[in-house]
Length: 242
Image (cartoon, rainbow, N blue to C red; front, side, top):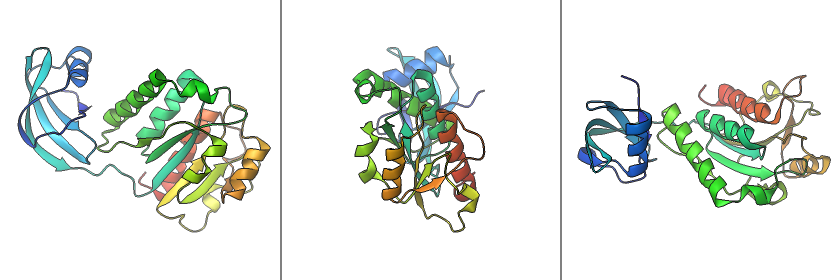
């Protein structure tokens, strides 16, 4: 049977019968087409997995039998916050999904001067709800047991106070590379990359003023969505858990 890992936004008992909420029930029964005796795991963000079996359907929702709770650490020892530039449509969705799968701790969407997405476009309730769904789906896909924080979108100029740990910014004009960082940056980093048009000169200057170190991703210019995800993967490989 396929592996199924579902999010349930509720308190979960360690054992006994449990009616799965309507949303995940629909996904389990209609999308995944699970049948009786299907084993699965649930999570609610508390860092544990709850082992369960589908035993029936009651009033259109899945009836599960829970059989134990087990702590399962999915957090990387490197707490990564990414200042993720707002990009168009599917590109942004893909970046958000992959950042979660790679184990970031916090995502701060930022609107930059040369970006094509305006901050007002990113603040709609429907869009924010869709982003939340993408984060949850990425946690389900990756087997995560905790959910990264998805912060409200900000203009980059308003996001500097949110910097955590060692700040690093991707800049094709930077002289350093990830592998040139001789000492471990510490348990927490903040990564900033630019939008489709790159970071403006004044944004790079502001980043430097806030302690960001300029890093380049090799001799090639990467697309906005590629650069951010590549940087997360490199950081996880060097200092995290990849």
